[in-house]
Length: 322
Image (cartoon, rainbow, N blue to C red; front, top):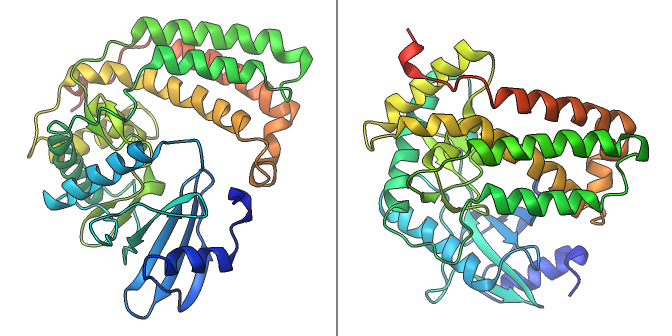
């Protein structure tokens, strides 16, 4: 079945095949990579069904993601946990893989709330303790050199970049890629969430971690830096708060703070490449109409150059925080 033709009837059929029934309230949630729906089941309560984009991950890779989440939940990490049927949590119908999760009755996480940040730091440390014990050998390893080479190749094929800007864009891009590869020196790698930002968090008497679609092995700081915003002083306060919670459970290697700007650059470039790679998906031109405009690409040339300069700035250091 075509991934883009998921209809309520198809969703109902897929869920019924594993004994789960939509009684009311089927609603598409904000997700572009996969297709995600919330609904109410009389027998199971509020649930979320996630249909995986074909070709993004193999069945074994998704099973390893779900296993990571299940083990983490068993170790007391506050994660949304998949439902199981006959010992399985990944299902298939009409060639589409899907999973079903209990909906978390919570509100939006507040990144500027220091109490919530400190509690998040503790939960991330607990997650990384679990990540130290699992091989995650089928999931990717965070590798900026390989990821940036792939992203650049995708962007080279992107016709939306105006001809008049291509030379300047790729000059700035190559300068930033060179800077990232020169500054990125990871130490110990652990199992991480991989995409820990406010949109993948909820709060109810503590933080809930959602959506492990990008889980992999990488430096622990990858799960921390996206919670930092504002000027340098504000980021230092946020970082200090996160680590106050983190280090109640697990020691944090402060040498990883030097990876923040290279990781920021990596995410910036991967985001552009992701939009380029998914542009044929009908949902993307509607959701991101600015992507193929001259103004957007002019801004990216400036942003890439600014980020290249950021790589040379002293990294965040708690020794300078008071």
